[in-house]
Amino acid sequence: MTRTKLTRAAALALVGVAGGLVALGAVALTTDLGGGTTTIVRTSAAPPIAAPVVADDRLSVSDIYAHAAPGVVQITSTTGVSENRTLAPFDQQASPQQALGSGFVIDKTGHIVTNYHVIEGADAIEVSFSNRDTLSATLVGSDPSTDIAVLRVQSSSRGLAPLAFGNSDGVRVGDPVVAIGNPFGLRRTATAGIVSAVQERTITAPNGYPIDHVIQTDAQINSGNSGGPLLNAKGEVIGVNSQIARADGSSGNVGIGFAVPSNTVKAVVAQLVATGKVDRAYLGISGSTITPELARVFRLPVDEGVLVEAVARGSAAERAGLRGGTTDVVVAGESHVLGGDVIVAVGGKKVSSTDELRDVLADGKPGQKLNVQIHRGTKIVTLAVKLGRQPSA
Image (cartoon, rainbow, N blue to C red; front, side, top):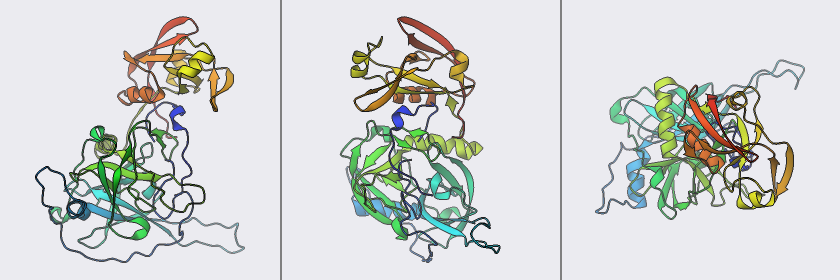
């Protein structure tokens, strides 16, 4: 369940929609942080406690914790290791591998949100509550493209303390936030910080697709925090803690963490609960955002848009006649492929970057027909595209 470094995902637009960097899940970050089997010690605690609400609707960190911690769970996923006869002359079965992560309750019917990479490949999943024994969980559905999964436990509704989603579109830099999770197995640990950035932050999902509009925070999150909530000053979930950036040689958090925004999570969870899967529209190009410098140096026909660098074989883009580039160049240390079409609008909406292109496609559905306006040399051309279905990776 390890993930590696932050990538330049903005240019990876094989364009469906989505999102990884350093996957924080379980017992590993980018490398093994303690590996092996994790021993789970079960404890019991008091039932959920409602936090007092202050006059301006902003809670203290201790109030947020009192309100939200009962709804945060520890997730233990167990994966059996298949027989490997290349290591020894005798049949050998390795011990099951356990990994830790976090999650949170979202309703009284027992649905729980966590990260996909926390439960990826698991043969058994257990959920540990603060106010009860550990329960077995079933996987309702997962979406590797946003690193989100939904579990369900069979439980009395009285023992469940659901957390409410907030509006991640309203998050601003400097807003106070609290992360609650189980770093390194230390149950229901709270850390506080601020929103560090919300613009132009993209991480890479376990299956290679980009997750856009993620929330950067300096609240300390570490291995085991994956899948836990990032909460605003009202105690609402504005993100799901998923990844951190690490400096070379560092073994833990350096103050740069990323959470999948709650508005993305809400949309994904609704589909997973309803159907167990998420279908995404897919165009099938890789491209990059045109910058003023790129447009000036290579005399491109427009100052903004998406430069089509490659077209996937058999994709909607290929069937519609979109053309990729032919000439490799390097501008400001970044590689580009020139000579392809430049997308400037999709479905009547202006597109000036790969992020905007993915946003437009996020609203589409497989099989939907859209007009794509492009610049091809000195000509403006409109192509009719029937969107495809995003591949699994």
